[in-house]
View 1 (cartoon, rainbow, N blue to C red):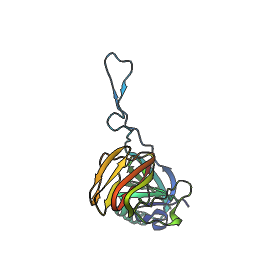
View 2: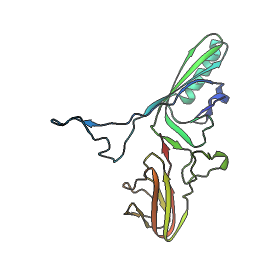
View 3: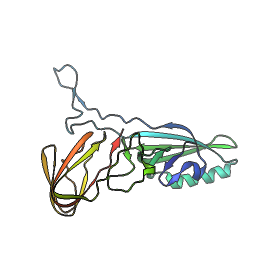
View 4: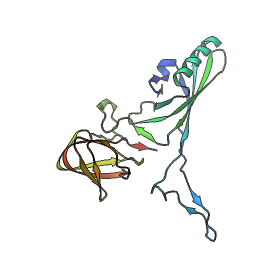
Length: 232
């Protein structure tokens, strides 16, 4: 059975829900066009502010049925699911997906199909990107690793002794990483140098894009780079 996990709950094992239909949703690009008198066609300024395309939230729709046998059981189980999920922001994992999770605000609806079966409809107002299950500073297991699309990220407590070069494979979602340094140091990315204080910090203008991102640290101490990739 294709199971769905929302938050801490496996919908199949917890409530016996059977998936009937899955619409993951397609994020709409936030296109911005400007009309200019005398110009043929609109001026596309979609990437003018950020330098890359941004996307809007989208809706994931999940439809299930379950056996209850009577109206009382349907009402009790429906109430339990509402209390657990409705209105909450949760992570959503589809099937045996090992690499990514979705995240968004949950809405639940239910109705009685017939005497034996009832239907549960779950809608997730989700972020446009799906996120890597583990950030670069979290522990992970080989059992959770996908050899198809997984990326091994181990950027915790890296030793900087004068200089250290770190390569970060970026996914399609632009990310501003977070640094935790044992002592103040600097980092260079795309020819620009940024000062990093001791402790946790971000450099708002240091943006990691899709492809190979090279960070060169200068100083002495340890640094952890927290990065969580995302994909459409």
